Image (cartoon, helix red, strand yellow):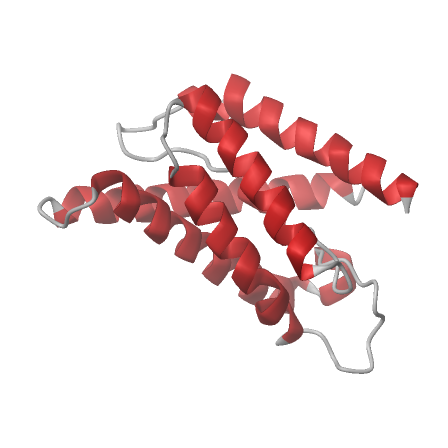
Length: 166
């Protein structure tokens, strides 16, 4: 229990520092921002308490909002993602699978992991940029932000996942 807590706290600090210090200040083509901290929510294992996922996600989103001056965007979007993640993960894991299965390329396989990660990242980007612009007046810019940020975030997640398993 305490080892899991310290591991989770380490990952929390890692994603917070990486996002605030490095990725939060990158805006490729003025519309695509890497939102790598989403990976923190996607890493929660199958048997993790749903309320704990919500609390961890809200706390990470709130800290990112405070340090990157995005009032409530990351907290709201990450909390929504945390509410959906456990139920979405169940779609890709067999019922008789391990209770403490942590989603990854190795445990789920490349195809299932891709189908698990991609819609959640796209949903997160849609919610984040919709809340940021709060209108569809400039729909082309909104779409460029969503698509660009989703692609960059997915590339970072898959690169990190492949490097983490080696």
